[in-house]
Image (cartoon, rainbow, N blue to C red; front, side, top):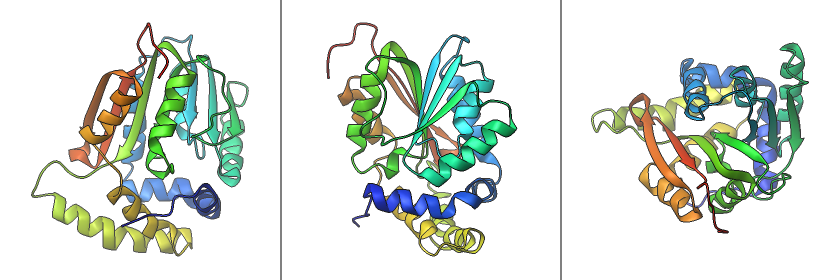
Length: 240
């Protein structure tokens, strides 16, 4: 099934649920979203000197986690203005607004200079990009040679016996909870549709490899409900 991922539609949808987005993440994941974010940040092996870019930053949870894990400077990019407004309020509340900057921009045209960041992340945003391969090329462009990438995205359980139960929850229960809590009719119908149309696991790993990344790994978390993709821009990286 074709899923409309035009930037205007996706940005408008996330703006509409921005006020309840964090609550929904916690409720619908059973609190596992915090664990998944920690795993992504840990994969970057931050030393305290890095400039970190968080793409599709939303309300800045991953950007904040990166700052707390020791990144010297963090830039979060998203095209949904209301999400960024909530993120900025959280940064100020956590006294992180001097360490983390939020910028409005598109994952397919990042407002970041070539080879200017040491590490990059995307958490649950790459499947929403109209052309994921273009976003991957942009991440390759802005990373310095030797820079590391960590991407979190939904997948399907690797245990065959679990998959039917998960799909039933994901397609029938989750959208109903999402609609009630978010008060938005379509956003949580879109979620299972977007996950179902996204090439997860080794298929997405091949997109990263084709972009030019090395050391590409696709690790299933929580039985494969989520995948953590890690990769590195080669130390001597040719133009893609």
